[in-house]
Image (cartoon, rainbow, N blue to C red; front, side):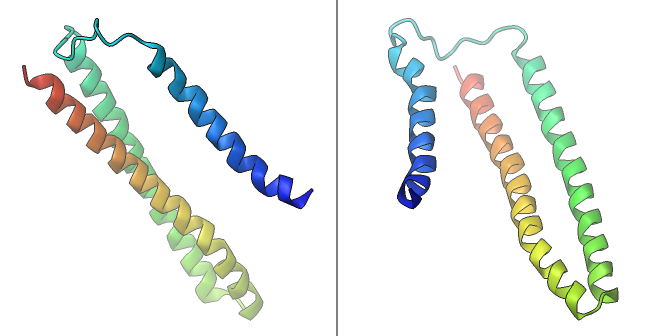
Length: 120
């Protein structure tokens, strides 16, 4: 039973990845035009960049605010409270890294994609 509980999340991740990629394998490649540039493409890129910028600013403000609160509580807390705050720091740091990495990765992908569509 314990082995099944360890294997099941890995199996589910692999199956979800295969299900997400399978429609791509089924599409024909002869009708794809890479240089298509619809009229609303610039508007789409601008909206996407604005949304990413807002997410990055709001995420940064929230992350810094939470870090300040945790830091003040850590300085003012007793030894037991400090141990609790150390436990809460790891998920906070992981979440902050994921937030910053996701936004920067999305910006890199959009800049790469806009560079591909701009060249004809």
